[in-house]
Length: 397
Image 1 (cartoon, helix red, strand yellow):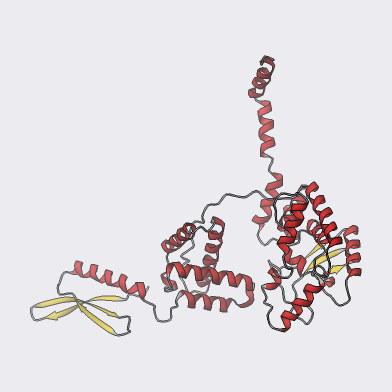
Image 2 (tube, helix red, strand yellow):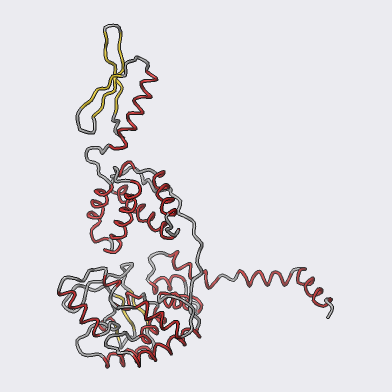
């Protein structure tokens, strides 16, 4: 690291005195006479001045955190999703708000820990804080990779501890009740404005597709002869809007005879020229108008395709008397069912489109963990079991 302050001697008629030589914040060279010849004292004063200058000093060729983030994302280009870019930028803006727009080379682990605590103090959940820290850590790691930084200041930061939530899955009974209610609603609702909920739930349970994958599924993605559905990104064309798969890799998922027939029946009901399987006709027309006016963003293809989606699903759950859940829990249910029916972790990882094996392993553990059963069997073989039997038989009626 470049030294900002130097300790020099200045000759005097009766000896010498120490002076500090440095460049001030105005860019001009400065000399500060210390008025003594005590080297140890002079070195302490030099270190203090160094610290003061470094607090607000930006080395030539260096960048503020805002500039560093802008430069880093520009270099990364389209190697990451636009939504991920927004998350990185948002995390850094929050960090700057709490720590300051300092030189990115001066960020320390201590500042990262202080930021972590500030986020927790204002009520951010541990999971939210961990997500912000991961984004910041990734940005700084890009700087290390590009030789802009010698080391990542967040490399050894501890993530806030959070309680591991149990994976929420729907039982067979709950799924049947949801389907019954959604079919009834489909008969009552105008399907030009509402999605075909019963079909969407069935496909989600069968394929484990994410919400945005279902929304952006087109008829050309379905191979009726091979009975498969392909998850593919979409280009920005006259009929389709741009959309990228979450983890970038395309994949193919199987469909049953019954699912194929339901899709054929659904296609027969749709007017000609509408490419999307689950986007209601009226909503597609509205989106096309927004696109024509330049009011449709890339992130909208992930978040805003179907209006009031969550509220409609919550109505279905409530009417079906299913305890509160999310649409994404249908995907979790599908993945759990794959494991329960003997599929390997690698096969499930491919079908689910997980980029991280650890994510798939969580579902495997949820199904394969027989700790309670093993503990019960062990207890049954121990003397404790005999004691229990004796106690029960000896309790007076």
